[in-house]
Image (cartoon, rainbow, N blue to C red; front, top):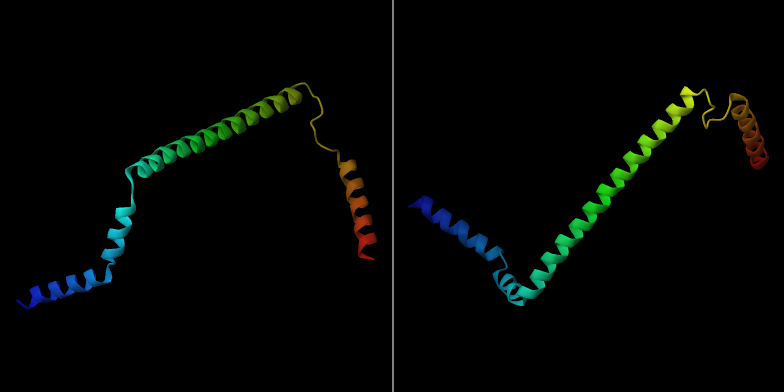
Length: 105
């Protein structure tokens, strides 16, 4: 008997903490049309989001494959790649250091 009264007391306390009246009032404001529109809107939003992600990934993977083929083609024909030479990098670093020292002064 004592165990049963503890369960009942726990259930009563839980029901006292749940705002049943507010839930009921909110549920009465719900309309089937709005729920249906929300469902349709959610499905369309999800389809649009998924389509954008798929096309983004497809575009990026296509661009990556095209770039890899282009660099492989240039490398096979001993054409220069779109990279600066070591002398160009050293000259640019010296120019940037000179500008930084001018700005710091």
